[in-house]
Length: 201
Picture 1 (cartoon, rainbow, N blue to C red):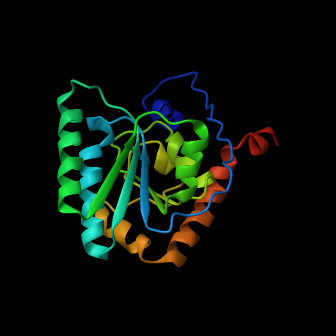
Picture 2: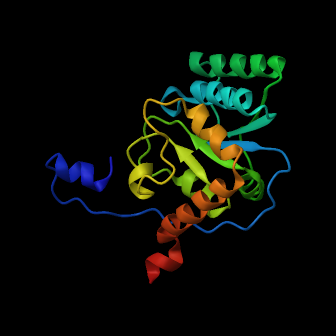
């Protein structure tokens, strides 16, 4: 929950304490379209639908896409096993390559943020959405579903339309560099509010 939600529910003594997001070093974009998600492989993060919609975006655009997922799931969790089976099937169909990175040094994560054409989150709930802001400050525009915190922090900029397949919004941005750039520039301004330099000022 964010501070506004708690206040509306009648909680008292609610204070707003934003996360700090460090600006990331600039990196060169991947030569081929790459999507990125950072988070747990779990039902609340909606990872199965993420793979499904990324593959649908590949069909819509005719592009060969790579989806990088940085995160871990519980080895004996049914959802994690289904996710693993799904990405194997994607590999056989050949439209989408899914690369799972369970643990990455910060420098490698920064390289993925910078290389990604688009950060995509279909998470059902986020308190703040730190990876989304890290991606933006690392050079990747972001799209996301309504999930509580992220749309509040980014004032709805990059919010995927409700009732419309995420693949359509992803495909539109993958095939329009100007729109990706405009989205990123606006999001960078919004994410910049949470950098140490701005919050100190």
